[in-house]
Image (tube, rainbow over all chains, first blue to last red; front, top):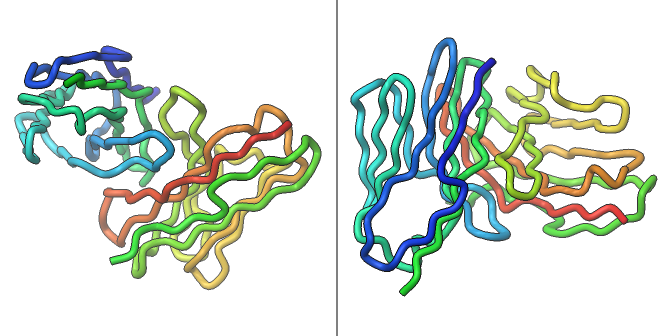
Length: 109
Length: 113
């Protein structure tokens, strides 16, 4: 069964304190791994797609990496506006996403 | 470019009442999805449309849930009758042909009392 597990469930950082969020997955055939950001009361906002092990993508203070078993979302020198829930999802050929439960990130000034 | 539009944003109903949610996808996106999101969880797929055809409705509780996508553009998701356990956020997403990237609307928060 395809499965996505995210850790930690919640993370509190001080502004400027870099850290990483983890997304581990089990799947028979990965078509893509996706990162989304979700603010309270809003729908998930697309961030990155990764397709193969070794691939990396960056956007502002965020960098996503992918191995054969997990993905990391690295947050460098975060700011309070980076506070949100970060969701990881996999696409396995059904043209639908299987999501993890997310990591709730809080960045304090 | 306008994003995915959903209405209403919030809905409060009593159990056993019917409810309907509407979604208009991004223009040109032929794939439309309905997801359900419970508090503290990631979204879970209910149904996927390719144009006007429902190609994956295996997770849709068909005894009380129904959906349609007439003319392959906007879509309606209906629950009849609603139960207390249906309280959740209902998200609509769309993607263009040939892409796995999905773009979500703001969701409809349903509260069943």
